[in-house]
Amino acid sequence: MKIFGDINEFAIEYSLNDQHGGSWLFGQVCYWIAGERVGDFPLGTSLRDVLIQMQNVIDNCGKRQLDNMVSKSPQELFDAIDSKLYGGVDVDNNSDESVESFYRFDIRIPVDVFDGCKMYLFESSGFELILYKKSLDGLVNEKRLSAGYFDAVIRSFYEEVLEIYKNNK
Image 1 (cartoon, helix red, strand yellow):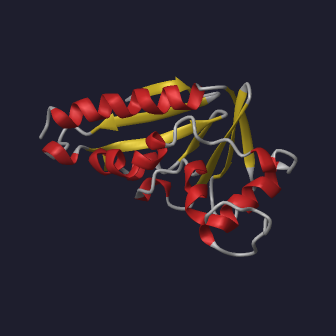
Image 2 (spheres, helix red, strand yellow):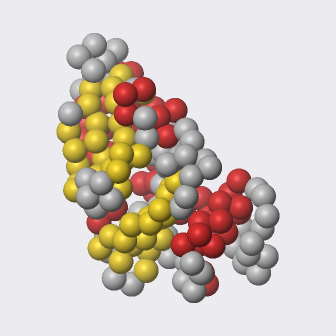
């Protein structure tokens, strides 16, 4: 098992199975946010699929500013982004941004271990804010991080698993 980051802030935990299936890289992965495990670590998944599916998260590092919503409560902000991405009541009809542009806030890696979770990251001057639900009917939780922290952790994880993948092709 390896952990990138601080589990009391934000971290990614992963392990590679002894019988990892070569380039499939079977193993486990989850996030830790504010001391809580987010994701079904014991379920396991293909870490190769994690690499592929997390490309949106990597590509949007440093691009998650949303100035027109800073006055909203965490619940209102979560609901505004969630409704833009997944439908439901549109709580921000005044936004000029396309639906596709809101995917930059989604930091959930779309693999089975994160089914049922929703997580969004917003960057502001001097800090980052993660808003997340551990289950679809759960409460919105929040964690404030220092600026650049999430991106540093996610990139370190990505680079290590990518190197393992390259060595197992």
